[in-house]
Image 1 (cartoon, protein in one colour):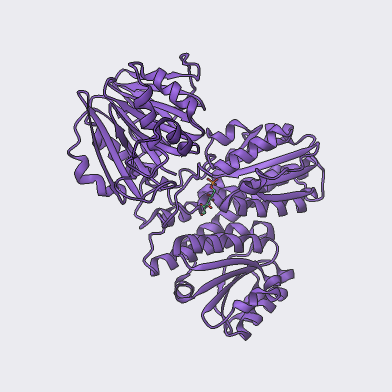
Image 2: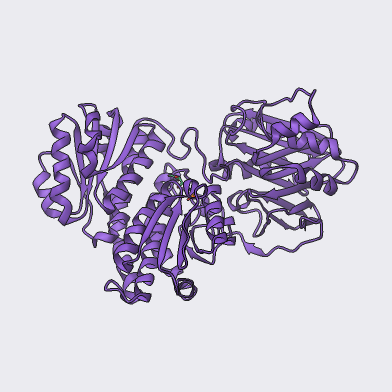
Length: 594
Ligand code: F6R
């Protein structure tokens, strides 16, 4: 959510920053801008639209130091003026985050000034300009003490041959190498540029120049931050012949599951310790991560026979949650940066819960508040819609629940070796599903529908919610996920010939019940398709409605396959409607603001 990039070195800054912004575009794509510094002169180019709209004007920016921004608007509509960088006097800044008290600060310090933009971010550059008296770090410190909210800010100042960084609650990494320094919101921006990166902590500042990056803590004392390998490489970000990242990432789901299983061994011991006295589990996350949490709830209840609840993180953090002795909170987040999930985890921890992070980002804000990190080894996910990370989460949560069951010696307990083997046995079936499931005909039906209802029972209902989220976010078709049995209690009123129901059926024991929902929709002239691995169900329904068969699997692992099917359905439908599946309107990946 908003991407920022900074460079200072010996090369022309604008092309380096442009390349970094292109690789960060998944964080926002409604406007973009670059500012460079050349011999004390600051030049700015900024435009509404995607990063590519900057290509021609960026060429005219001279200087070997610069900062750039790709925006996901929070305050102020997407426009050239509201695009970052914001420049005043000797300063230009780019900002990721939200300054919650910007109106208050404006009224206090600039009551008579007409601001150039409608953004919350402009206040930062105005304050720097006001408080600067020759010492950049002191000005940063003074300004940061006034700001409320979240920020990762890059600053160029006409007096400093480099750029400065300040960070609070929004992610920023820094790195350096032979005569150059970098900063960015996320590792892919620095793919191929920087092999080792450091993650700044809340309250940190940094000065970056051709002679390296100097990090300071909140008291402006020099600080050392751990250096980690930047795993994003040019090759890892390649589309590999796919038309979109979404397609590529769905195809990578089998390796996400397989690598997650391998990575689990590293944390098994620590997880056992954390689970030692646990008697109840709350699972939290947002969007797709919450949906995988709904699957995890079923795993924990059925394998470990332990009470488990799933709570949307943005709700959990603002209620007064009941955390009793022996409560563990599992916080799920692909990015590890989602503000609501990180704050929910912090709240849980402050109330005495053990916190288990399940994340694809091993060095993220979420991992800092967790007692143990269960890795999702899906690799970088660039498409805004989560796909392979969901698969990785399901694999990680399955193993986590099995481990809990084994500690509690419940009937579902088995050796972890068996649990891992069960997932590995699904991997070839998943490879087959993502490569060969034919969704073209059903996608045509969905593309013409006024609304699409995803229905299922039990674990299939959790996948129905994910199918609906995926479809609505990348096609903009109105969609709902619903428990199949609930249809007749209200939602059926919406069914007519322009509506489509996609019914997911992977449990033999519930198949007949779900087929009732099929009949109920057909009777109201709605269109219906079924995704199933139940042979009898397929036999009964073929000829009556389109049936998409997915490979048979143990019931609990069916989400690995049925979710891949609904992801493919959403992808194909988006293509028919000529939507960009990688960059859906109004959205961005990694929601680091509230
Ligand atoms: C949907 C999607 C979002 C994210 C949600 C949480 O396809 O990608 O709903 O799942 O914003 O993000 P993370 O997992 O990064 O916390």
